[in-house]
Amino acid sequence: MRHSPPQHPQFYVTAPQDCPYLENKVERKLFTALYGSNSSRLNNSLSKQGFRRSQNVLYRPSCSNCTACMSARIPSKDFSPSKSQKRILSKNEDIVRVINPPLATDPQYELFKNYISKRHSDGGMSDMDSDDFTSMIEETNVESKLIEYYIKKDATLELVSFSLVDILDDGISMVYSVFDPELRNRSLGTYMILDHSNLALEMNLNFVYLGYWVKDSSKMDYKRRFSPLEVFTNDKWTNASKYNVSKIDSDKHDQEKHGVPIYLPSEE
Image 1 (cartoon, helix red, strand yellow):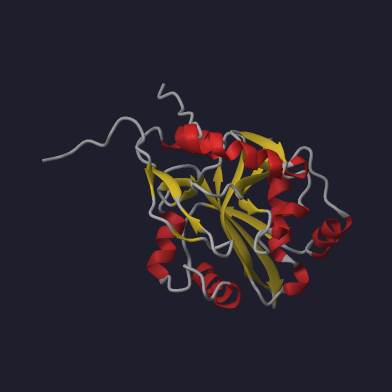
Image 2 (image 1 turned 60 degrees about the horizontal axis):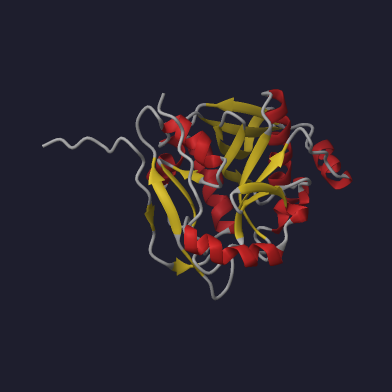
Protein backbone atom coordinates (compact mmCIF):
# COMPACT_ATOMS: atom_id res chain seq x y z
CA MET A 1 0.00 0.00 0.00
CA ARG A 2 1.37 3.41 -0.96
CA HIS A 3 1.09 6.17 1.62
CA SER A 4 0.99 9.77 0.43
CA PRO A 5 3.05 12.25 2.45
CA PRO A 6 1.06 14.73 4.56
CA GLN A 7 0.03 17.90 2.74
CA HIS A 8 1.36 20.14 5.50
CA PRO A 9 4.79 19.89 7.19
CA GLN A 10 4.90 17.80 10.34
CA PHE A 11 7.17 19.02 13.16
CA TYR A 12 8.98 16.81 15.68
CA VAL A 13 11.37 17.34 18.60
CA THR A 14 14.53 15.32 19.15
CA ALA A 15 15.43 13.63 22.41
CA PRO A 16 17.77 15.62 24.74
CA GLN A 17 21.50 15.26 24.11
CA ASP A 18 24.66 16.99 25.27
CA CYS A 19 25.00 20.55 23.97
CA PRO A 20 28.04 20.91 21.66
CA TYR A 21 28.52 24.57 22.59
CA LEU A 22 27.87 25.03 26.32
CA GLU A 23 29.06 22.76 29.12
CA ASN A 24 26.50 21.13 31.41
CA LYS A 25 23.68 21.94 29.00
CA VAL A 26 21.48 19.68 26.88
CA GLU A 27 19.94 20.50 23.53
CA ARG A 28 16.79 19.53 21.68
CA LYS A 29 15.89 20.40 18.10
CA LEU A 30 12.58 21.07 16.41
CA PHE A 31 12.65 19.66 12.88
CA THR A 32 10.60 18.93 9.80
CA ALA A 33 11.24 17.16 6.48
CA LEU A 34 11.67 18.95 3.17
CA TYR A 35 9.88 17.27 0.29
CA GLY A 36 7.62 18.02 -2.64
CA SER A 37 6.95 21.10 -4.71
CA ASN A 38 6.70 23.36 -1.66
CA SER A 39 10.29 22.71 -0.49
CA SER A 40 11.80 25.98 -1.72
CA ARG A 41 9.02 28.10 -0.26
CA LEU A 42 9.28 26.25 3.06
CA ASN A 43 13.08 26.65 3.11
CA ASN A 44 12.75 30.37 2.38
CA SER A 45 10.09 30.91 5.03
CA LEU A 46 11.64 28.87 7.85
CA SER A 47 15.19 30.16 7.21
CA LYS A 48 13.83 33.61 8.04
CA GLN A 49 12.52 32.13 11.31
CA GLY A 50 15.81 30.74 12.56
CA PHE A 51 15.74 27.30 10.91
CA ARG A 52 18.74 25.66 9.21
CA ARG A 53 18.87 22.99 6.51
CA SER A 54 20.75 19.68 6.75
CA GLN A 55 20.12 17.56 3.65
CA ASN A 56 16.33 17.21 3.45
CA VAL A 57 15.62 18.36 7.00
CA LEU A 58 15.01 21.83 8.46
CA TYR A 59 15.69 22.33 12.17
CA ARG A 60 16.14 24.92 14.89
CA PRO A 61 16.93 24.75 18.64
CA SER A 62 14.04 23.92 20.94
CA CYS A 63 15.67 23.88 24.37
CA SER A 64 13.32 24.30 27.33
CA ASN A 65 15.90 25.82 29.70
CA CYS A 66 18.16 27.83 27.39
CA THR A 67 17.79 30.47 24.66
CA ALA A 68 21.50 31.07 24.05
CA CYS A 69 21.61 29.54 20.56
CA MET A 70 20.38 32.02 17.96
CA SER A 71 20.40 32.05 14.18
CA ALA A 72 22.67 34.81 12.83
CA ARG A 73 22.87 36.71 9.56
CA ILE A 74 24.82 39.58 8.01
CA PRO A 75 22.80 42.38 6.34
CA SER A 76 25.16 42.63 3.40
CA LYS A 77 24.00 46.04 2.19
CA ASP A 78 24.81 47.53 5.60
CA PHE A 79 28.00 45.58 6.20
CA SER A 80 31.38 47.27 5.91
CA PRO A 81 34.58 45.25 6.45
CA SER A 82 36.85 46.23 9.34
CA LYS A 83 40.49 47.16 8.72
CA SER A 84 41.63 43.63 9.56
CA GLN A 85 38.96 42.14 7.28
CA LYS A 86 40.07 44.42 4.44
CA ARG A 87 43.60 43.09 4.92
CA ILE A 88 42.27 39.54 4.63
CA LEU A 89 40.50 40.42 1.39
CA SER A 90 43.67 42.00 0.04
CA LYS A 91 45.77 38.99 1.08
CA ASN A 92 43.49 36.68 -0.91
CA GLU A 93 43.14 38.69 -4.11
CA ASP A 94 44.70 35.79 -6.02
CA ILE A 95 41.87 33.41 -5.10
CA VAL A 96 39.52 32.32 -7.88
CA ARG A 97 35.84 31.78 -7.02
CA VAL A 98 33.88 29.15 -8.97
CA ILE A 99 30.14 28.50 -8.55
CA ASN A 100 29.06 24.93 -9.29
CA PRO A 101 26.01 22.68 -8.86
CA PRO A 102 25.92 20.68 -5.58
CA LEU A 103 27.93 17.70 -6.81
CA ALA A 104 30.56 16.02 -4.62
CA THR A 105 34.09 15.46 -5.94
CA ASP A 106 37.18 13.64 -4.69
CA PRO A 107 39.17 16.89 -4.11
CA GLN A 108 36.32 18.24 -1.98
CA TYR A 109 36.21 15.07 0.10
CA GLU A 110 39.98 15.07 0.64
CA LEU A 111 39.87 18.70 1.75
CA PHE A 112 36.90 17.92 4.01
CA LYS A 113 38.70 15.00 5.70
CA ASN A 114 41.82 17.12 6.27
CA TYR A 115 39.73 19.95 7.69
CA ILE A 116 37.80 17.66 10.04
CA SER A 117 40.90 15.85 11.30
CA LYS A 118 42.69 19.12 12.08
CA ARG A 119 39.81 21.25 13.34
CA HIS A 120 36.96 18.98 14.53
CA SER A 121 38.47 15.54 15.20
CA ASP A 122 36.12 14.96 18.17
CA GLY A 123 32.99 16.14 16.36
CA GLY A 124 30.07 14.24 14.92
CA MET A 125 31.45 14.38 11.36
CA SER A 126 34.79 12.74 12.13
CA ASP A 127 33.62 9.29 10.98
CA MET A 128 31.91 10.39 7.76
CA ASP A 129 32.97 8.36 4.72
CA SER A 130 32.78 9.41 1.08
CA ASP A 131 29.17 8.22 0.74
CA ASP A 132 28.13 10.27 3.78
CA PHE A 133 29.92 13.29 2.34
CA THR A 134 28.21 12.85 -1.02
CA SER A 135 24.82 12.70 0.71
CA MET A 136 25.57 15.89 2.65
CA ILE A 137 26.40 17.74 -0.57
CA GLU A 138 23.93 16.28 -3.04
CA GLU A 139 20.78 15.52 -1.00
CA THR A 140 18.93 18.76 -1.55
CA ASN A 141 15.63 19.59 -3.20
CA VAL A 142 16.05 23.36 -2.98
CA GLU A 143 18.31 25.74 -4.93
CA SER A 144 21.77 24.85 -3.65
CA LYS A 145 25.24 25.68 -4.97
CA LEU A 146 28.85 24.85 -4.21
CA ILE A 147 31.02 27.95 -3.95
CA GLU A 148 34.59 26.75 -4.53
CA TYR A 149 37.80 28.72 -4.06
CA TYR A 150 41.07 27.97 -5.85
CA ILE A 151 44.62 29.30 -5.82
CA LYS A 152 47.13 28.83 -8.61
CA LYS A 153 49.93 26.44 -7.69
CA ASP A 154 52.51 25.15 -10.17
CA ALA A 155 50.42 26.44 -13.08
CA THR A 156 47.32 24.54 -11.90
CA LEU A 157 44.35 25.53 -9.77
CA GLU A 158 44.22 23.94 -6.32
CA LEU A 159 41.02 23.76 -4.26
CA VAL A 160 41.59 25.46 -0.89
CA SER A 161 38.06 26.00 0.41
CA PHE A 162 34.41 25.54 -0.47
CA SER A 163 30.98 26.28 0.89
CA LEU A 164 27.68 24.49 0.35
CA VAL A 165 24.99 27.18 0.20
CA ASP A 166 21.28 27.57 -0.39
CA ILE A 167 20.10 30.48 -2.52
CA LEU A 168 17.10 31.97 -0.71
CA ASP A 169 14.79 34.67 -2.00
CA ASP A 170 16.43 37.21 0.32
CA GLY A 171 19.96 35.90 0.83
CA ILE A 172 22.61 33.19 0.81
CA SER A 173 22.47 30.54 3.53
CA MET A 174 25.89 29.02 4.29
CA VAL A 175 24.96 25.40 5.03
CA TYR A 176 28.49 24.06 5.54
CA SER A 177 32.00 25.41 4.90
CA VAL A 178 35.43 23.80 4.63
CA PHE A 179 38.91 25.28 4.21
CA ASP A 180 42.51 24.13 4.16
CA PRO A 181 43.64 24.26 7.82
CA GLU A 182 47.28 24.54 6.78
CA LEU A 183 46.77 27.99 5.21
CA ARG A 184 46.32 29.82 8.51
CA ASN A 185 47.91 33.03 7.25
CA ARG A 186 45.10 33.45 4.72
CA SER A 187 42.24 33.33 7.30
CA LEU A 188 40.14 31.43 4.79
CA GLY A 189 37.13 31.02 7.10
CA THR A 190 36.80 34.78 7.45
CA TYR A 191 37.59 35.33 3.77
CA MET A 192 34.76 33.04 2.65
CA ILE A 193 32.19 34.91 4.74
CA LEU A 194 33.43 38.25 3.38
CA ASP A 195 33.27 36.94 -0.17
CA HIS A 196 29.80 35.48 0.36
CA SER A 197 28.66 38.93 1.47
CA ASN A 198 30.10 40.37 -1.75
CA LEU A 199 28.41 37.59 -3.71
CA ALA A 200 25.06 38.43 -2.08
CA LEU A 201 25.46 42.02 -3.27
CA GLU A 202 26.33 40.80 -6.77
CA MET A 203 23.12 38.75 -6.75
CA ASN A 204 21.10 41.67 -5.33
CA LEU A 205 20.35 39.72 -2.15
CA ASN A 206 20.12 41.27 1.31
CA PHE A 207 21.61 38.73 3.73
CA VAL A 208 24.18 36.04 4.40
CA TYR A 209 22.83 33.47 6.86
CA LEU A 210 25.71 32.15 9.01
CA GLY A 211 24.06 29.46 11.10
CA TYR A 212 23.88 29.65 14.87
CA TRP A 213 25.65 32.03 17.23
CA VAL A 214 26.07 31.41 20.95
CA LYS A 215 27.31 34.44 22.83
CA ASP A 216 29.34 32.51 25.43
CA SER A 217 30.75 29.87 23.06
CA SER A 218 34.36 30.27 21.90
CA LYS A 219 33.51 28.15 18.83
CA MET A 220 31.00 30.78 17.73
CA ASP A 221 32.83 33.93 18.76
CA TYR A 222 34.18 34.70 15.27
CA LYS A 223 30.68 35.53 13.99
CA ARG A 224 30.38 38.65 16.12
CA ARG A 225 33.27 40.19 14.15
CA PHE A 226 30.90 40.73 11.23
CA SER A 227 29.10 43.90 12.21
CA PRO A 228 26.26 44.68 12.07
CA LEU A 229 25.28 41.09 12.93
CA GLU A 230 21.60 40.25 13.33
CA VAL A 231 20.27 37.42 15.52
CA PHE A 232 16.82 35.83 15.51
CA THR A 233 15.27 35.90 18.96
CA ASN A 234 11.79 36.51 20.38
CA ASP A 235 10.31 35.88 16.92
CA LYS A 236 12.24 38.70 15.20
CA TRP A 237 15.68 39.69 13.90
CA THR A 238 17.61 41.99 16.23
CA ASN A 239 20.99 43.72 15.99
CA ALA A 240 23.33 41.54 18.06
CA SER A 241 24.92 44.61 19.67
CA LYS A 242 21.49 45.45 21.13
CA TYR A 243 20.93 41.90 22.37
CA ASN A 244 19.46 42.34 25.87
CA VAL A 245 20.17 39.33 28.09
CA SER A 246 17.81 40.36 30.87
CA LYS A 247 14.95 40.84 28.43
CA ILE A 248 15.58 37.46 26.81
CA ASP A 249 15.57 35.79 30.20
CA SER A 250 12.39 37.56 31.27
CA ASP A 251 10.65 36.50 28.04
CA LYS A 252 11.80 32.88 28.30
CA HIS A 253 8.90 31.88 30.54
CA ASP A 254 6.38 33.18 28.00
CA GLN A 255 8.16 31.34 25.19
CA GLU A 256 8.07 28.09 27.14
CA LYS A 257 4.43 28.59 28.08
CA HIS A 258 3.05 29.65 24.72
CA GLY A 259 5.67 28.35 22.31
CA VAL A 260 7.46 30.22 19.54
CA PRO A 261 5.16 30.60 16.52
CA ILE A 262 6.01 29.11 13.13
CA TYR A 263 4.67 30.82 10.02
CA LEU A 264 4.17 28.51 7.05
CA PRO A 265 4.27 29.69 3.42
CA SER A 266 1.28 29.64 1.14
CA GLU A 267 1.08 26.57 -1.10
CA GLU A 268 -0.14 28.66 -4.03
